[in-house]
Image: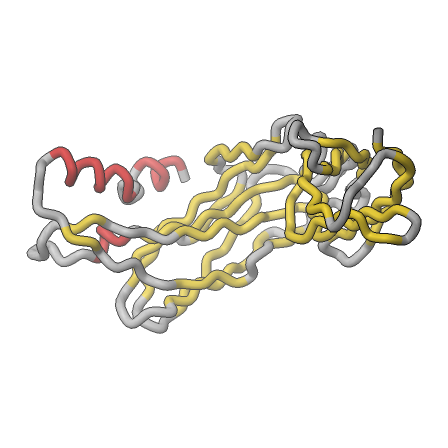
Length: 248
């Protein structure tokens, strides 16, 4: 695996820099189009491997590179990705023909943790310079990338959320949520009410990994004076958690 990482195609940004420094006449290169299924990868400690299907949606061959990164978050929720060899990717580099497909398998090398969820990011990048004709005018590659979360979850691992309400410097409402559990939480919606009347809402999708916290901006639907509030937080599995709070 280490040899694979050392010998992989150069990153598009490095090629762009090299082209710029030699002062060549450059023209844009069109990016390909590909899809990855599934978009979230779930495994249990009993699973030895999992398959991911990559489909070339375009009419030209596409060259791709797949990397696996450990995915952690700082205490403030900032993502940290570090290239890892905890799992084998086969193949890590591929050329997919027009309208063709390629199966990539992820096999675990690192022993699973029975007490907490392990979180990774599988990043699949296009490498347009790898399929560029050698006699073609130098071009600036425009590459696509997709990032899929990978969760290896033991039966005992669960999220455990704690949320409060506060105000940002501009007086906007913020939900201050911390995950003190052993599995990820993805917040899909937050509804803040006063006396059954909605005063703020968040809609989207934000991950909070174990041990991290995030300030989630709440869009106000009307003025939110201080006092008692009710907050309902809905997660990606459709379950909700309710909090009775007080806004200063």
